[in-house]
Length: 479
Image: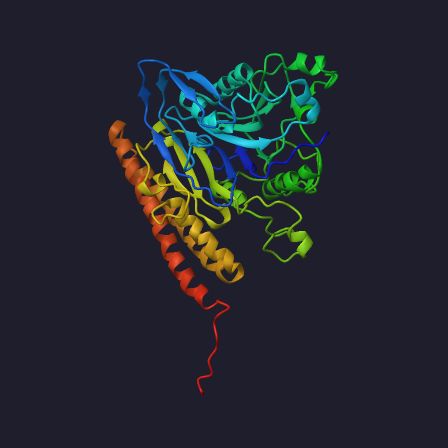
């Protein structure tokens, strides 16, 4: 494949899990949002709104002035926008009132011959707008793919992306290619997929509309531009994607490690270009295992940046959990409970490996105050900066202080997991506004517990770090 221009500011890792592959029957989609060294995020809940007239979306990104008309009815949904909308909203991830989850995007790359045939559209849709113009207007994962696909065909896009959708029954992964083309594949109920900044979908079965969706004219586009013969169907990854050194060291190792974690029975190598998109796990997948993967950095291998490998090995591959992660989320949709109770928006602010996933019921009416504060510079009242602060303190003396962080992470994981179990029981007979109010209170309690623990940890780390200062001097008491 032809090489692509590498963008160091758009890099994520995603995982999608079908309902029969999970331990409790949930569908789950998750992603690390990786961008800049310190770029604050907040969490909001947009209320349901019936407008008298259709609304018009206009992007704040001056380089890509995308605009489109929106429906009059906007569903309630959770989202994690950035501290500023100067470059766009980047709402990134959320669950709506109909029990549909969306995460956007997994940045990827098209090869130059495809882009020559259908260049990017500077006024088209990009990552920053996708959740905002899609999630509040869909009632199923499939409908999400179809709506966003229609937008891309009509308006075009200025980048290549992977988008995750789920509802309580189905999980879909969608990929855009060139200026106006896209494909999507349903993740089999008994399978999972790991994606890392490269086009991942392989063979498209044009006759199987239950499991594949795609742009209307994609077959003619491929044939007319001599991109592939189509004699053996369409392998989207091979025809539209890339396979160069950036993929070999930056992308494929993360997929390899994910499949090594969940399917260790299948031997593979980290630089392989033949890793399958769809994989089956050796056992049922639990929520904490998904979170553990998104927080991982090749532990147990020579490639762990803070492990025991050689200097070259420790810096050979880009880790899953990165210092530039803004937030990490797992969107869990649980079966056999009311839709208001079904969705849990697990959110870890800052660097995943140095943070804690806090569970937020999507059926709540608002988010805790600390999660609504996002500023350009450090703010002690902001959830993002509280978690980020701990990570920075640990990084300064990683091997000496990481154990303290791990202890708090483990304790909080137990407490927050128990919090979900007890809350589910307490609200099981509630409905309507009463249920929403109870879930809002539960979210506040979870956030307060996590933030208090991290603030206490920061205080301990500051005290311990003082003894590690290069300005320390051991005085001989006999002097």
